[in-house]
Amino acid sequence: MSVARLLKKTVVLGAIRIGWLIKPGLVTRLYTWYLKSEGARIDGLPNYLSAKIWFDGTDYSLITLGEGCTISSNVRILTHDAAINTVAKELGLFFDPPEIRVKAISIGRYSFVGTGSIIMPGADIGAGCIIGAGSVVRGTIPPLSIVVGSPGQVVGSVSDYVGKLYPDRLREG
Image: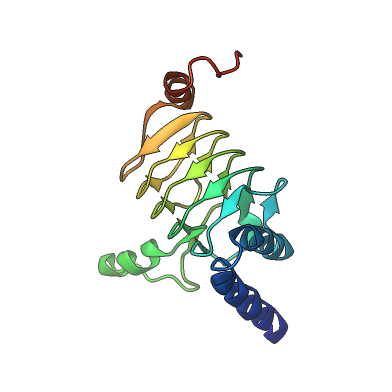
């Protein structure tokens, strides 16, 4: 990483860590700008990005965030996994260069990712999903799904959940 990029990252992430105390909405706009400037694909403006998200900075172009998504505190978004490089050594396999699995992630529009969740490499979260706090998400999550647990499992439908809470307000179709 160049000195200029490192300085930019230090200043912006420092401002984000302090800014949430003053104006959380500003943090979301600043984080969005920074991620886009580093190559992330962001459609529109997220609803909320916590100052305490850990984005795997291996390659920001592997990260896609949808319009209106919310990502809570202490969420980890991973695009790489180097575990095989370590564990294969026990089997006598040594990789040069190191073997690192790299896969894109996507969080769909108007999806909600609860605090402490981990989004694993290759996760594709559909539009309008709820990811419960502390969930570990991998693979493809269908739109309008509710996911909880480790490993994350689809346990319900957002349509059913919202329909029970607001039966007279849910629009058809």
